Image (cartoon, rainbow, N blue to C red):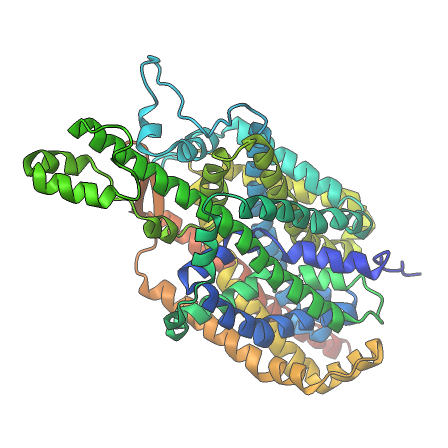
Length: 592
């Protein structure tokens, strides 16, 4: 007798697992960056439009397919068509490669969390040099937060060719991160469902605390005004719409197989349409909410740096021209500069090269995303807050819970097809399968703890998923609508849930969403081709800043392999299925 499939204890567990998976680090560190780059408040227009015409339909498609087929990604697409099992394999490969590098972020969060209990925070001041006569030269040329990230955390090499040794402190944090993932996925939905209460809800508690603190910071309004002031001209920029569509697509976690895996543990009668709308709206609202928090803190940091710059200029003028304290203030600085330039032209020209150009607008215009925002910009703001240790602990604890929530989804996308396999599950219990998966992932991800590990992290982050996921979701949509049959699937969905598939979902599944995905796919493909030689940002310790370098040939080959490793599974599996069927037919004919 076939063993009954596991199920969520209640629909709320499923909903929270989906929210925990989709609301991740991208909501905190990529969406605010896109708002900053593409028109502030006006970016919300294309973002919300893409949510309605792309995000919701594709999310509903994956949840509905998973719930109907009640299998992981491989079994689901093999049921749709025997030739489409490769779609599930491709999803598994992408999820595996993504999990390999993504958990490194959790390791870094652990490292910063542990260091947050020190007084003062270790990234708040530059360390002394070996002679104890001054500060480390690299730190002075960069900043204390950059120095702690690039030197103390990564111990980064000057180029990707200089691999260097494994850094034991990040490596131990990485092992801890994988142990945590193993414990959270140990018994499948039983443990994931309970952990989801924590990983889905805790980040909002921290964000609310940060919002209250952020709004009370000096200069927070400068950041919020910068965010919400619309730049309508950006709506005419095609990249604004492309980035809005891309953000929706990747933020919801489409194509990995995670949503299909989660939905496969639902009751067949579950209203997945309602859950689609809730998850989509919560995900987008979370991005906007996180942006308000980010820009309030960003405004504080920019204002702090701007006023600090003004104070340095004032001190320079007072010392250079023997002025009385209090005669030069921020409000009369420009008039004093004009007066000194006209009265003491020769001396002023000597002082001018040492005078910084202070601009609040330029401070706010500095656009940073990803690890740069999380581990440099945020830490720079935190170090200037009162009770900075408390805010640091809260922040990195929040990053950790967001990262773990996404990791549970990625791991489920791999574990579900493996545990569904009768061959594997008959020999190995799911605890052993989960343990082996985490062990293999952890061993591979040690690559990211070597001195050149940060460069390899960026390669995986940039090239593992983008083109692959677009193609996977395109094939998924075409498979449901034109291989399995939209009318047939709609009838089965109605019989299962009691909700008829209306014209909105049908039109978007059959026409609009596939066309959007094709457009995005060709945009990224063209962008890769036209960009010429691929480049990366390397840390130059002598200058204390990032410099641009070309990837060596062997790295370009690895990038090509990463992109092709998942996509190639679709045609190869289809070809293998075709050959096996022909051989079986040939064998049957010869017997007859």
